[in-house]
Image (cartoon, rainbow, N blue to C red; front, top):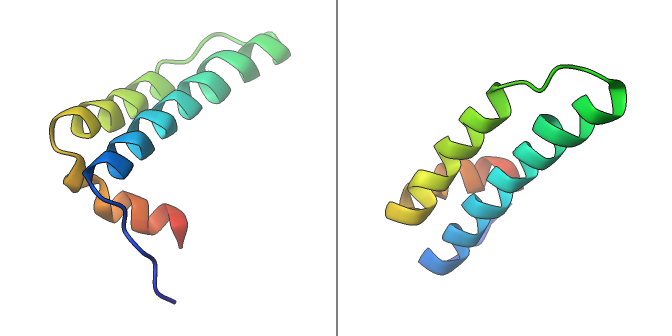
Length: 69
């Protein structure tokens, strides 16, 4: 199966959106819904996506390919 990799702008958007997804869902929503402590790990994953998305978006190609597979 061939997966078309987006350009730098598309990879930047992917990294920013996925980072926001992890924080929003696993860092805020689920802990709030189930009365759990707010974990740190979603923020670490988000920062690990946001920094490359802003500085070197092409480095997100393997992550994009794995996510879309």
